[in-house]
Structures are given as structure tokens and as C-alpha cells.
Image (cartoon, rainbow, N blue to C red; front, side, top):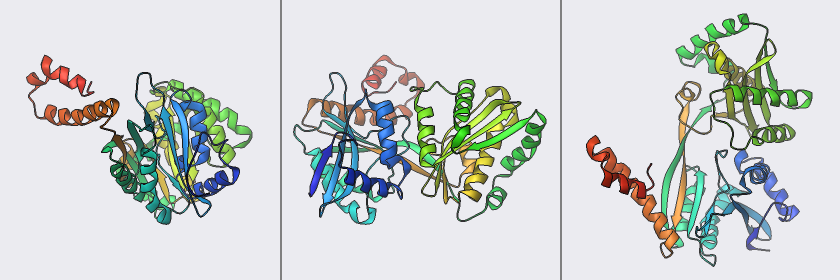
Length: 377
């Protein structure tokens, strides 16, 4: 079997094909793995669309998995997108040998774009623009005759450990952060009976999950759109041996919790929260330092990844910044594709125009009308 094949779920994918991609995922990003995609689809994507798992075979063997989703939207056209949402730090293809298989990716996405009936829009996000797959996907969409618009998704701060110990890493932190840790750790210890635990699996797991949920509810963060998502993800990561769930308790009461995922030498800081009532103790920073020490000295990771967002505090802990981008492709021969392109390009033009206008003109009724048409709130 050679060429492009499509499956509607991992359950319908041949077992030997799935096994190949599960092995490939061991040396790829966690958010490209079948385990993550399967869980994300069953827990959050069921009402958003239908999975379309495209597999490219060569010489009878599976080489590339490109997970996509046909979006289900009332009165919308035929739209195809990455199976990603609020919880996704990365999307894109999973390749058995990226250096070899990446060159076939452009033809693969062009074949998908050429399916009949034609797609009105194809939205791939969030992607790593530094990876060869980004250029190949963009070229393939261009070659298929679609109007392709790259767009920014979010900044991504990460730490290159570079073989250092935690002590060496700590010595290089900004003096402000080192001084905060030096002052707050004794204050935290003096606040009551303090327990700091890092849970990976076992009997302590369910209590740690309950503690995480308790802290999250007491934090400054908005409620989860899918309340069962995080408990399920924590259990999945524990089952896979990837979980590092840190919890701080004062007198038995959880006050801070963080979910880290360790995979292929990378520790991803996925979720963090602390009880707003103990903000003065910097308990979140203390817990971050403890988890940093664990993943650097015990797990021996090569990279720590703060994932999504340019929050200022991340710069203190991390060493580098990169970006995640999307590729939006429009079929200009269909009404939905043409209108989407007009809104997308118009939005960019109006953002540029808006920055150059005096405040009085920006608030005018005519400008506000066209601003709304371009999708700007």
C-alpha cells in the first residue's frame, strides 16, 4: 500500500500503522503524539468537527501522519483545520524520519487540498516556523492554488539547559529572582507546616489531582472550558510515565500546583496555579524552582519549555524565545473562501491603518463599521 490514505479515528487505523507512529512519537514533540491527539479528540473536539487522519505510505510503510479535522459549523463552507484548540501547544505532521520524509510533505498537503469537493479554507496551527515542515506545508498549499496567509499565534519561551546542573542554572538566574527565592523560601517555611511534593504516579496521584483542582479554583485563572480535561490528562501522563505534578501544602491545605510533562528530553510546563490568598509568599516561584531542580538534576532534560505566551515572568526562568505561527489557506473560487480571505487580509490592513490614526478618527462610526467587518473587536 503506497500513497495517501485517510482514517476517521485512531481506532480504524491499522494496528501496525499506529504502532509505527507511536514509535516515531517517542522522538517527537509530545503534542504530536497519537496519545495526546487521541485524548484531545475524545475530550474536547467531539463537537467541533470530525477527525481526518491522513497517512502517507511509501514502499508499503507509513511515513507521515498529518492529523486534521473537518470543522462542523452551521452555515459555514468546507473547512479543514488542525485538531487543536486552547489546550494545544503545537500541531503539525508526525514523521518517521523528518530529514527524509519532510520533502514529501508539500505534495501530501497539496493532494489533500485538491480533494473533491474542494476545501474552502484550510487552517494549520500552531506550527513551528523554524521546522522544515512549515516551509513544505506552505509550498504545498501555494502549489494547490490556494491563497496562503501565515499568521502569528503566540510567543514561546524555553530554556536550553546545555548540560548544566540545577546549581549552575540557578547561579545564572536574574539577581531579582534569586533574591526572591532566598527570601521567600524561609518565609514559606515559617508560615506553617509546609509540604512540597512532586507526584509522578501511584497512590498519591488522586489526592494530587484533587489538590490541583482545589488550587486552580482558588487562583486568579478563568474556569476551564472542559472541567474534566485536566484530571484526565494528568492520569494519562502518569500512565505514560511523563507526569511531574508539583503540589505545595501549608498545614495540609494545597496552595500551589503545577503540571509538567516530561517527554523526549523536554519538560513542558503545562499548567500552573496558586491560591491568591498566599501570593505574598511567592509560593508559585518556590514550586517552579523545585520542579526545575527535579527535571534538570533527576530527569536530565535538555530543554524546559514554557509553551504558550509571552508572560513577563517567563523571561526570568527561560533563556530563549521562539514563535508559533499558523498557515491559513483560502480557496478564492468559493464564497466562503473569498469572504474569509477578505476578512483576514482586511483585518491586517485595518490594524496597520488603526495604528497610524489619531484617536478621534479611530472612534468614528464609519471606521468602526469597517473595523467590525474586518473582524476587529
